[in-house]
Length: 187
Image (cartoon, rainbow, N blue to C red; front, side, top):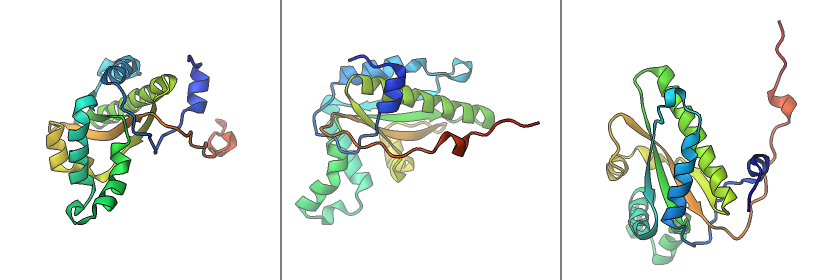
């Protein structure tokens, strides 16, 4: 299915409930490669991606369980399984790191560029029938998480990006009217 850019922008939704079907690592890598055409000042391409797909998924799940679910050892098997659904039903992961330049202007440009990159990822995945969800859980700055991703001191982890297939399309949430966020320039 080929969508127009307009259709992809208007129809794409963040998927919060995946169906558990794995996404092929090659599909994820293809999307990540195509998304690199995002606008980025000076062609710095300030992003680095750590992919968890295929045989790496159980390792990702274990890491997330240990970081995201406090005192998971104290939970019943059923309660732990319920908590883990938000992690185990995604079909692949991409953890996004961005270079943190010491200069504020460049740091802001690089974060904006990485955001454009991730929007490209979302739209390209949507075109292929793959849902995504861009998450920013509190553990992204956890030293154990940073160590697992081999994050460098000059890198910031900005996203836990989930890929997956889904059975039900979430309803669109209401957006502001144009007049609520656009005003005309007056001299």
